[in-house]
Length: 439
Image (cartoon, rainbow, N blue to C red):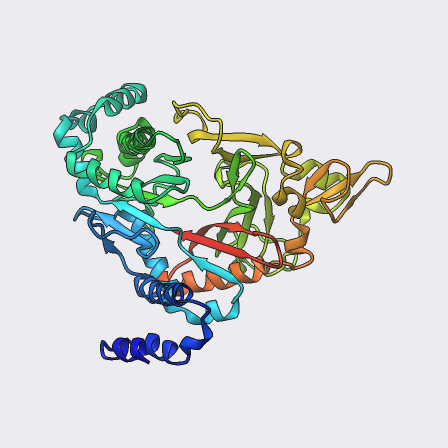
């Protein structure tokens, strides 16, 4: 019990107890024992970091352990603040994790560049005039892309990128964003990057370009117009940037989640036996741009997932089902990413991906001779996205989980909430993961 005694003397009681229950004779080699000790020690470190915003330090940052970190000493901004709050709520609510033991519920790994990064960038490059006067968006973009990031910020970004290899989303988090009364929803920009280029300098360029473009969106015409309508002053606005692990899985040359969507705790248009307070969800295959842009999605009440007025008949399903989805290309993409076109995303047709797992698992197959839709995507024929295996057959408890998340958010915020979420189904009945961010 040398290990457990040593760890117990440092007040690591739970870890020491775990080691005390295991004997050295149970391991085939010293290497196997070493791996067991490392895995369990890292699990404790990771658990302690959940719900905690860690200060990013280049000499000791651990991307696997520190799930929520920030660069700088300024504000996190509205969106990042909501993320941190939701992360803490999920960490405290052990009953939710116990209720869904097979599902990983959490916030994607997050790094926030606080508002002092933006303020240093504006001051260093003398860009204050863009806040005070009106300029075309194209001119703002051009000047911000030519500008240089502060050395301290660039060094931290380089250190971060050296440790993370997964695709990233780069989101705005302004001081006024996601407030309860003036949410600024959809005003600023979000960009996705594959973050796997063989040339490290290209990866740095992609991320720094995305950060500059989010900074530029602070002074775009739409943001200033909204500020004027709400009696806010654009020159008083400041921007933090949220860099998050993009949720999804690889399918050929593309990366995307099986399901993404938005759930709201108040349903303004209830039908049949639905009640307003039971909420409403909009879901789609692929990345959430389909939902945010108001394209074809499936709308349902988490309380009554089988009550789908838009899918009343076969003809309704064929007319109203999703035909396109968004994915991030992670292979064979150009060195120069198309940031200003669909935020680097590609709009794909469903039939182009009918051999990929999410389409097979979430689609039915239309049989023209019978004029009916079979509840399987594994037979020949045109695929129709119905989400039947989730909503009708309950193979993944998404409706129930969304209801629980709405209740958690509503209690925590003290008001109606809206939650954006993504789902990785893995291979259904084996590995499943779901992750959320809340505003």
